Image 1 (cartoon, rainbow, N blue to C red):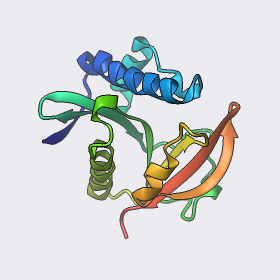
Image 2: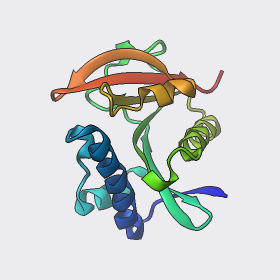
Image 3: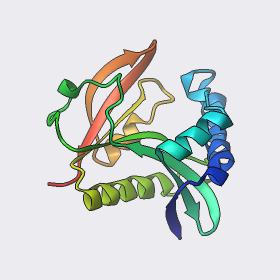
Image 4: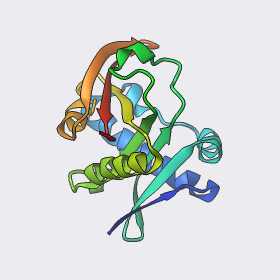
Length: 167
């Protein structure tokens, strides 16, 4: 059974292990790239304390993680989106252990984010994905996210997506 909980400081190493395993798999499949970088444990501890970082479990086994925030990242522009002032979750750092990929965990995570958004009166979920073969744009599109912009940030080509959840 899939369950979700807010990560605690003591979970930071587990979150990093999950992200590192996913990044190493992308590196194995697509070579070195921005996707093969993972925050240090110290930075992850700061994120766990200051942001909403979640741990995803399959039964009692940690298998995935994601981070949401309501503050617009500085590299996003409101005018890219159909409803620029909509209350929004921004999704970051979604990762699933490679041995659990292709088992519906990612779909479950996106469903949970939709539920969390509805419960908090959030209208939209926005994210970016690498505009490269290592990117997950096709995955997000499959679950209702629409590509709204192609661009780059710090030399990394990104596709920006959004989904409206409170209609």
